[in-house]
Image (cartoon, rainbow, N blue to C red; front, side, top):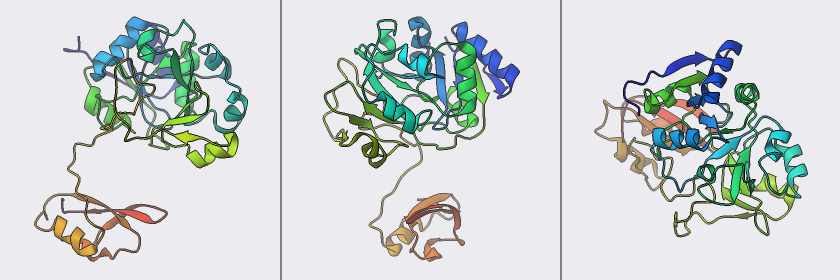
Length: 301
């Protein structure tokens, strides 16, 4: 299926967005940006087209995909029963990085929902994603644009690193603003339940909904019958780079990188940690958020 396929590189301009929309309407696969990560999209109402997403990613059929919409009307067109919480959630978080699991209409193919009677839906905030979906005039089924189990892509080049030659096109809209997957909130049960934590925090949801439970990530993994949400496996979003954990002492970090002076390292350490931990040169700050700073050095764990 994927031998000698040419993957087009499209810029996020009006003509290219229309071209990408035409590819999806014809049943092709297009990677596109959202504010969270790049998605790999196809027509959500075309089960045969959605099966191509699973094949390109090497994704098992028991792992459902999220459907992306460009309006509330399009969102409600997928829902069999509109939840009472939708008005408040929509006003607070949509468009944005929140996915809702809700009872689905029969028009949503089973391949999208992994055979379950629910569908995961979100309204992305990224303007390129919104324009693409609006141009197609149909909801787009789109998991992250990477091989199954790999780290989700936050730039077009990341999607190409995994899927070049396996999909029809990549719509390059630059880097994703958030870079973390959407939060998945299940509204199909008796009480709201967070199935996957992401960009919208439990605290933010509780301000709107009151009590909100969080699914236990250590719960037994049973894919039979289909998972209720993406991102619920014990091993997911796995980097290929080796990861080493230390006990938090500067000496332990220095020992971990000792003897690896000619390779690169990324170290996530408390802001109070001394910058003398580098084995070769002064660490260069990459990013600071709260109490942690990411450093880059020329060593490797």
